[in-house]
Length: 197
Image (cartoon, rainbow, N blue to C red; front, top):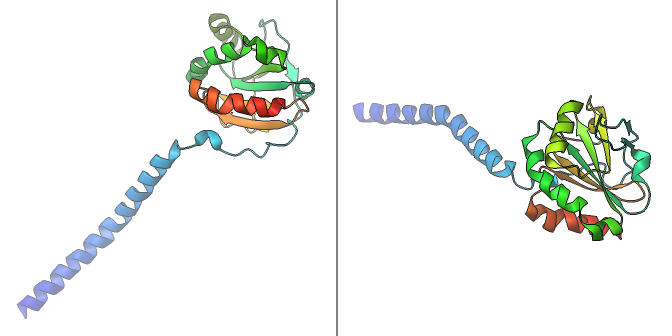
């Protein structure tokens, strides 16, 4: 009898252990899955705006930057406009900035109609101006989106983000996150080429 009681007691302990550890094991499995997939293809988050006209907006210029503000009407014309969402408080924006400067100085792309516009997102004008004064200004136009409302209309998740806009004003591509040399060569330049055709 005591042997049977021992087995029943052991089975009871196993069940309690499974009941106690089951949710923990499920949580750990889900956490692992989430963490391994979190950074994977984050820049490929789809945008409902791809293939649609850029939202209607009109942004004032960034105070003291000596460039025009811009609106959705400025996105129409020949060539392609690269709209870069940036802020002085954004560390990854500093990291990608030299690559934007490189694009702005590319005479071949300029001759083919590439323009770069900046959407200064939820930033103080003085801080944004200092940011550009210290790192250079790759933008032909800069719109000051102090409230972040225009960014919401564009579907901005955070900064930096970059949009490729065709000459007819439609959004062709959206890149989320800082541009690296690799993403510039493998992703952004091919998307610009496609939009220029």
